[in-house]
Length: 78
Image 1: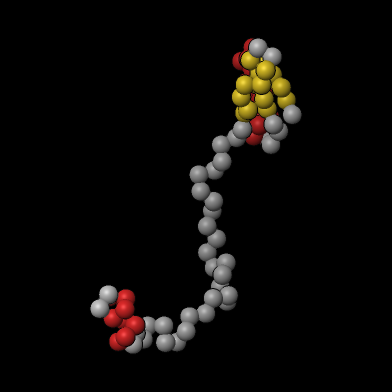
Image 2: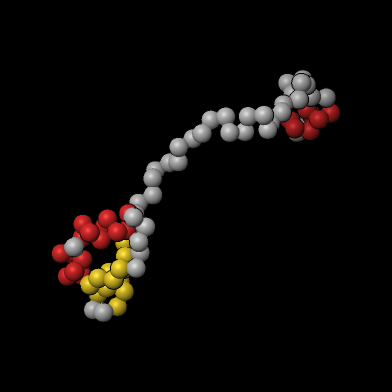
């Protein structure tokens, strides 16, 4: 963990940012008390991996078959 006061943070901002990106905890203090924590920004969206669930999910052969009338009526509020 790196601690720096505001003056040190202004002087060494680039080094502190690099340390935070590398996973180190960086705390900047004001008047001797911890004020802020410098953390890296998380990536916007994780990369999608297509086909991860392949061979794990099965769809029944009758998936698209019409519903029985009584169940369809219940869904439609009749």
